[in-house]
Image 1 (cartoon, rainbow, N blue to C red):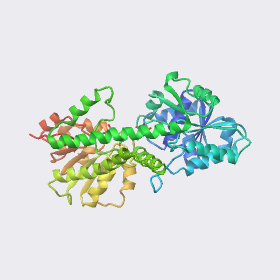
Image 2 (tube, helix red, strand yellow):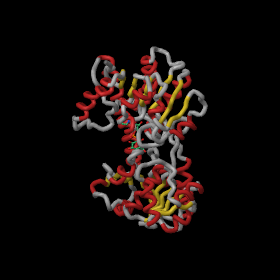
Image 3 (cartoon, helix red, strand yellow):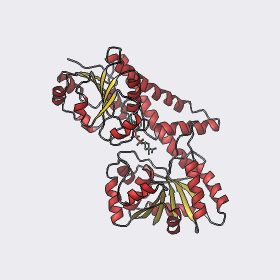
Image 4 (cartoon, rainbow, N blue to C red):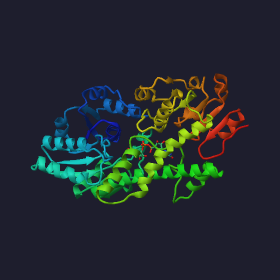
Length: 438
Ligand code: UGA
């Protein structure tokens, strides 16, 4: 099948590459000429494990191409995925201007019927807006509108695409159903869940909101454990063994970040407000997550004797989670900003996100960056782990002891083995349990 994917951001590029991998002919369209030219040479603008190889293979096999010419793509494709960004507007709602602009251009440049599918995360009712818009713009052509939200996680997006829990298809006619079955014929048929367009749009927001709620729940349980003397690791494990709860997304940490959860929660609340529906539970998740970062800074201050000014902190991790260079809404960045404003001196490191963080934190001169995380610990008063990179969980404690005199570790991801750390002579602070020391 010939598929056009509009927008070569994270979602568009991963989806386009994976559609090519499962045998479709894919044309990726974007108006950013320099991005298109780089992609045509196999140069990938984002860090995503495995993506570069898939794109290179697909280019070689002529299964994928990149263009800035929408019309040329529409001339040979009957299925068009819209995968452009839906940034957060000032009032928290999703800004649909890119999506609607693209829909209008599709209508203007189409000479034959098309199935237009939104992959971008769009609020309930967007499908109807697109449907009205394309009909107004080009009444001569029959357009079908569908929603196919993506559930990919950064860092494991290829695996998520290839092994989906479900593929949600919001459709408005029988012909669209057949097209979806053709697009996803390489996947077990029972994975395809058909529904109407508006429900598909809601499923995406509901899923992200639920996962964010689960994280905030376990973070609050971690607070309770710390105060009353429980242990979050055992609590989380035992809760997760209940198949009704499940063990995923029950890891406490510095709060959720990334380009999706914070933005999508705001957007669903906005949709609800506009429709006079009170989502009080989801609203409280926003507060809980905001407070989380304040709490983390308080924890750091307590460990450092109540004073942050002048303290030297080795900050291990800047990305919002491991296996990505993405720092959008990263708790590490927000914690770093507060610490820097309070006068701390930060020695920061990350496995992939240093360049992005340098730009974000360029206003501060009390931060320096290290590619070797051991080097970052050299003059520190506190070693602070904020992102759960594998390299940090496997750190060589003997080497740390040789490099630095610092013997205090605060592990905001609970990735170190408490016993091992303490037996090595460190004071070990973590989330949701008693500090360990010899
Ligand atoms: C999330 C969803 O998981 C995807 O299904 C969805 O497709 C995507 O948003 C999107 O809407 O595009 P992503 O933002 O890549 O994916 O990252 P997650 O792995 O979900 O993590 C989000 C945040 O929650 C991170 O800051 C992470 O560190 C945090 N988290 C996650 C925890 O603090 N604890 C956990 O147990 C799990």
